[in-house]
Image (cartoon, rainbow, N blue to C red; front, side, top):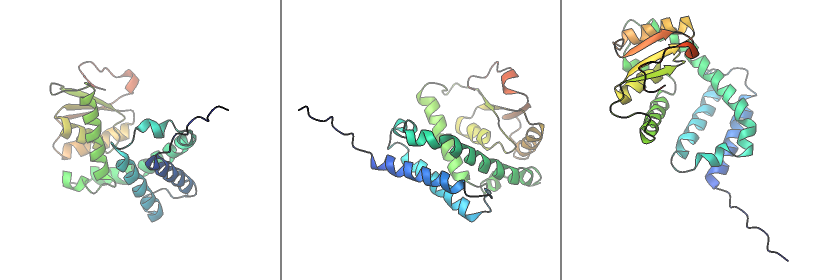
Length: 207
């Protein structure tokens, strides 16, 4: 009688994260209020963000992303996370744009700011690792920069490059221009009102 095929041993970290991801989407689906003013939602998101960051460099992402359990919840989870982020931006956009004394320090109070900066730094490191940008890169385009262009600001800080922001929302463009002007970054970060698929990216080395 042939020996049975050996069973692949489950990775405890992967299993723990998948369980948390399922708990996260299950919980968020019960919440009518997905704002950060809902303390339960805020704590849930903090736990999820921490779990994602703790996996960095210790687990092959494919083990998680290709797991059928994650595939089954990926779309509803991303929809809930997008709704939460949109709500945070909606609450913060006019506050920053209307602040006559806006500083980088004040931007630091934006919810999740610490995680956000770390994420951009990792993205930049990955771009350099795979040769997408280098020390000679001058201009990077960012599509969908939003009313509070934190990614553009962090991208400029991390690379020194000129950042070309494109957003299809006229309101988002007007608000983000105010933020950039107040921070004295208008010569480094340019904001354009346009559809991403119609924008002329000539001169941009990375999109």
